[in-house]
Image (cartoon, rainbow, N blue to C red; front, side, top):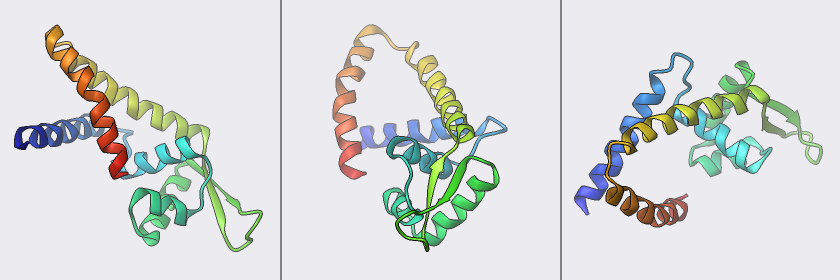
Length: 137
C-alpha cells in the first residue's frame, strides 16, 4: 500500500513540475477549474467552488484571475439577476488543451521506457484508479 501511495504522489508531483516548466502555465488549481467548466458547462461561482472543493472567496479570486486573462466569460444569470454564470472561453479551452498536451507528452515519454508486461499491468490497473478517483471527486 505504501509503495502505491508513494508512487502515485511522486507521479502527480512530477507531472505538476513538468506543466510548470511552460512559461505560460497556469497553476493546477486554475487548470482544474477550467477543466471542470469544460466538462460540465457554465456554472455559478458557488457551484464551481463546491465542485473544486474550495471556499467561495477562493473561487472568486481564481475566477477574477481567469477573467483577466480572457480564459472565462462572466454572464448574468438569466434566472437570478444577483448571480452570474461563468463559462470557459476559446482561450480557456486552448489553455486546458495545452496543459493536457504537456502532461500527456510527459507520460508518453515515461511509458515508452516500460516493457510490454508493465504497460499491460498499468492499463489493467487504470480502470481501478479511475474508479477510485471518481469516488473521491
